Amino acid sequence: MFLISRLIKSIWLLWPWNLLDKLYHYGIRGVSHKLFSNFLHNRMQCTKVGAFKFSYKKISCRVPQGSDISPLLFLIYISDIVKASSFHTTLFADDNKLHMSNSCFVVLQRTVNLELCKIDNWLRANKLSLNHNKTNFMLLNSQKHNLTSFKIIIDNHSIFPEDKLKYLGVSLDSKLSWKPHVQRWKLNF
Image 1 (cartoon, helix red, strand yellow):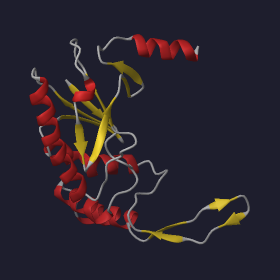
Image 2 (cartoon, one colour):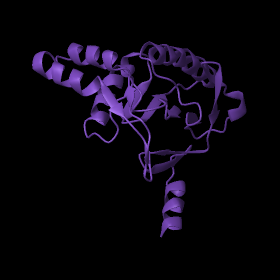
Image 3 (cartoon, one colour):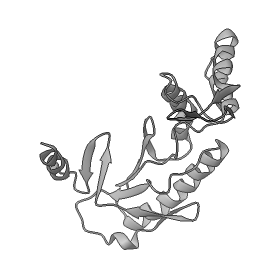
């Protein structure tokens, strides 16, 4: 089994007009659609450091940070990624997982790379980008394979294997044992 994590770069960076089109597609129309449009457009923000306050700048491609509804809007924005490829996809805010399995190591590698091309196309079409620094993968299986021979490339960037991944606060290893999770908790207590 193949597992990839933290695919999308930022939950705050998205294009309001694409989001409004998706909201319309999902049945948000009329007054409700206008309310979201007003929420997303003509927003200004500034940075304050101590007593110094920078000038306000118009925000053109972000949902407001700190808003209760922004994570939900991001999930609506990316919800159709599950249809972009044959990966089994799990979404939780910006913590996205792609899963795929195949009994043949070579077929799995080829299929993963082909499906990641589809994901890359979806990201580009939705004006999103891959988080190269936080995207990694892990092979889950009981057999030993040479991970260096399992090459994953997306957008001309190599994705590197990990021995352990953290998913929603749970540390996983390639054998799905509880050892890394228990060790992490022992260190904290």
